[in-house]
Image 1 (cartoon, rainbow, N blue to C red):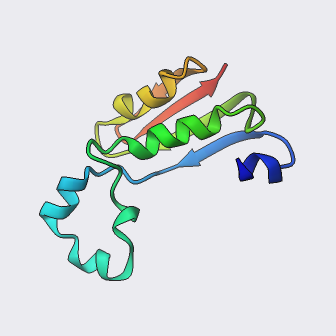
Image 2: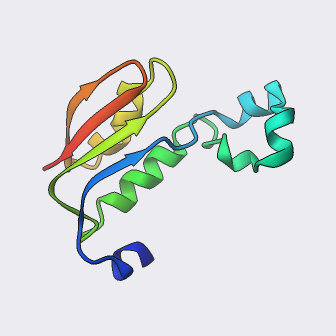
Length: 109
């Protein structure tokens, strides 16, 4: 809510590479070096790795956050662009423009 209240109108583009690893993967791999300097939250996105995408989709669909026709570019793990895009498509407010190996590009209707 604060981002919208403090904003000067909607944005035309959002780019994000949120954390996308499931909790169990991070714990099994013991990201020891990285975790000594960064929070585990920098890597983990819930049990299935999709929580950050779902939360971001919820935020950017709030009225006033994005301008009509705005673009959302999402970074993701290799081969997961279609899955990452589903959080946005499920809102019914986006169309999928394209995907690559590590990114999804969506447009707000």
